[in-house]
Length: 336
Ligand code: AMP
Ligand code: MG
Image 1 (tube, rainbow, N blue to C red):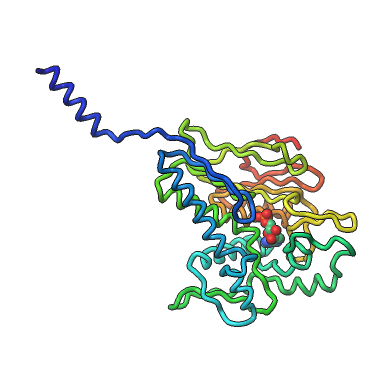
Image 2: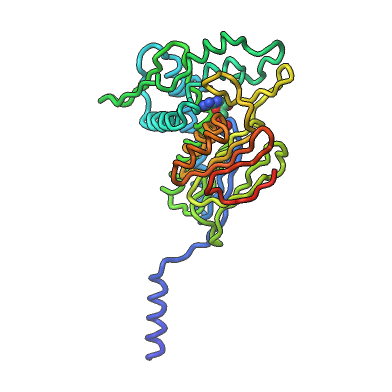
């Protein structure tokens, strides 16, 4: 009888313990946000549906922010530039407030109103104009005057948030931070659904939640900017994001000169002093915006601002192939 009593007690106790479901890896990838998106998550068999919904969430955020989609909220602001304020969703409002913060922090090196310069250099088209010479200096200077993130007026009215660009012809371009915002939304959605270990890759931005079930962090390869099939280094990521801006992502040669898609808003010229910049940050919108900012600022000014920010690290490959990084970068020796 005593033996049976203990057996029943053990059964009652063990059935009261939470059941540890097997954590399996689920994975989905495909084209989204004009780039390649990948979501990996560990969980039970409900994870597949959660990942599908994460993709839909990222597409939804993209539909708000994509300046190439005439139906997006950003396009509505662009079309109304110089005219009336436009009502926007709280999500777009927060994304633009954050973007303003990074623009301030980088002294305007990251400037999301760079749209007119992107158009001038032809990076808004599938095929940029390759014949002839660069845009003339006067025209570059003129277009530069249309670029100033401080001219984006944002208000929280009783009827909801609004945004307005002060001058006709001004254009917001979300290319440098939109994927980071989408990755942040994906991470939040996965967490809301109880996922404790996941990786979201949206173009050059990768965000990770937690550790893998074997208690190891997610490993991320940082691409070599001139040998794209190999890695410069590998980093571990845990509840962080990493973004890389590279001169190899979108570029063309005109009159023998390599012209890349990241433009210095102060000079109106494509940046030619850096091959790639990688930034580690607590979230994707920060790493994305600041990787572009540091691309413009270059190693001296770029590392100076990163050192000021707790939880941020950066690695820069200069035009000559020198690799420099911030004081807390995880590796100390990286060969190019
Ligand atoms: P990323 O790959 O994140 O560095 O973003 C590059 C994209 O951001 C470009 O293709 C442009 O659409 C846009 N862009 C270029 N220069 C700047 C800049 N100085 N500030 C903000 N966005 C920029
Ligand atoms: Mg960026």
